[in-house]
Figure (cartoon, rainbow, N blue to C red):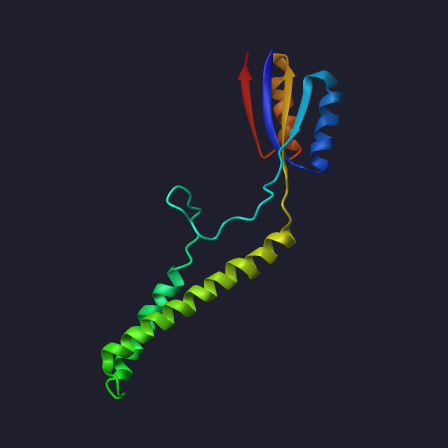
Length: 154
């Protein structure tokens, strides 16, 4: 006996795959589907030392801070406080503007895109069958758009 593990998005393709398996001689008792639950909490925007998701809220801020510092220092030669103060003001102003742009982008725009796409849950399908049926079962699973498969010989 072997076990074939596969993952599917929760859709009609999963139901069609199960029906096809039953038509090809796999008993209902040998098919096991486990739906995974989605994350219920929103992702945190600020990373900790132990958890980072690859989203940086300071990258745009550092780019705009650098650009505004150069512009502020250049214009500062003609202004009363001089190039150093205006360069620092440009740095902080550009960084704050870039940070707020990234914060708005990830909190509002990206969230709307995630809500529009929807969160598709994933289902793990476990099929226990004879070793000679393994290739047929895998072909059926791939034909019905499995995300991935694995075979374990027991």
